[in-house]
Each structure stands twice: as structure tokens, then as C-alpha cells.
Amino acid sequence: MRIIHELDEMIEVARGWIMGGAVGFVPTMGNLHNGHLTLIQAAHKECEMSVVSIFVNTLQFPSLEAAQHYPHTIQRDLQLLRTTDVDVVFLPSHQAVYPPTFSTYVTPTGPLAERIASERGTEFVRGFSTGIVKFLQIVRPDVAFFGQNAVQQVALVRQLVRDLSIDVTLRVLPVVRESDGLAASSLNIRLSSEQRRAATALYKALLAGKTLIEQGERRTETIKQTIQTVLAAHPQLTAQNICLCHPDTFLEMEEATPGMLLRISTQIEDIHLTDNIVWMANGQWRT
Image 1 (cartoon, one colour):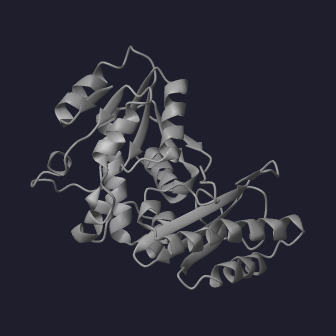
Image 2: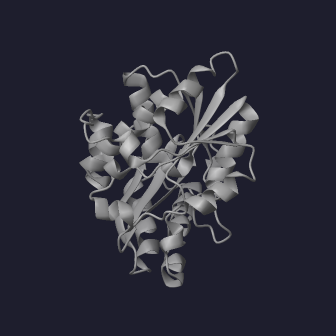
């Protein structure tokens, strides 16, 4: 496992990959969990080279203080990565990625960006987009791996790849869940025992919506009300958004149809938690 800190070194290494086979890339902000390990295993299996980045992208947070609340567990992460077959760990400093002279940002526009900004803020859309485009340019992967739990980010990356003609294929793997159904997330470590019990309501609420659909209900408002009822039983949760929508555009659907995303966005104090399931086009469910 090679650890690279400098951008110039990562760029030079990436240049040498052209004849070495496919490169799989797993971008992370650290505090690695089983979901990340699943992505890393897939990258190793499907590609000749695998790269994991660890970088807390401060641009996508509303403030530097908010970014500092994100769990930083670099030594634990590196120890965990040594148990995998990852080839390169890209571990740049904030100063390297965003030097004092940095002044070029990627700012997506359009309905998708507006919908995500209405929930996460314009700084999230701009910050995430700037960071991911920069990392894709530095690492130059053939395939970038994401988890279905990051469905907003995946939709944004799809738009960026399409609009900016970035030569990369996206692979999206199903949500990895803990034993209590909670979607694996780097933020779960910040939850108290009581908050974690409340957070499991997200998956239960989604399954309640799924059951209603399987019983023949198609009215999205009725399904959303059922989901909201499950969430409302846990006052620690503040529901920000419940949507039944297209997974790429986040356009709300008037009726539940196969190919639809059921997604919940909530807040527990200052912790943003999301979960989703997909009613696939073949009628099966990805939960």
C-alpha cells in the first residue's frame, strides 16, 4: 500500500497508469466503515489498480467549525486500509488541495443543483462539485465507486461527468447496513445510544413506504404521510425532506412507479442523516 500526500506525486503516478490497466477510485472523507470497505473490495476486484482518497473537503461545509466536527480518524483508517488490497492511498493536506491562491470553483446549475442546495445549502453543492472534479482530474480513474447512500452526490457527479466530458465510469453499489438496519455512515460514530435508536427509524419508515406500495398504494402523498408518521414517533429526528423521485434528477413523482427512489433526509441536532431505497425498473427492490 503506497501512501501519497503530494498532488504532484499523485499526478505523476496517475500518468503511469495509462498502460497498466483500469484504475478504480474510491473517494472518501475518512472515518472508514464497512460501506467504504465494500467499495474498496469492488474496486480491487474489477480493476487492476485501486486508489482510495481520504480528504475532509472543507468547501462543502457551511463553516470551518462545522468541518472540524467531522470525525478525523486517520491512523485508524490507515490501519484498516492495510488489511485490504488497496494499492494507493491519496492523503493530501487541505493546503495542497486549496492553496491560498485557489480561486476556481465548480458551480453546477439547473434543477438538480437547486433541489440539493435547498436541502444542503449552495456551499455544499459548490464545495462537493469543486472537490470531486479536482480529485477526478488528479487521480484520473477509469471507474469511480460510490455507495447508494450517497445518492445526491452520485446524481451531482453524473451531471458533472456529462457536462464537463470527464472520462470516467461511475459504479454505484447498494447501501451497506449495520445490524440494526442503520445505513453505514461516517457520522454514525457521533450518535449517542438514544440518537442511534432514533436513527434506525429512517430505514423502518422507508420499509413502511415499501410495504404500502406493495399493497397497491400509488399516491405519493399518502406514502409520504406514512413515512412521516413513522419518523414522527421519534422527536429527536427532524425530517428535512421525504421524497419519492427520479434517482438522477430528484424530480418528484405524482405516482409511485418502478425506477423510483424513496429517500429521507433528517437532522439529529447538527448531524445530517439520510437513507434511501430504490424500486427498480424490473419491479425488484434495492434496500
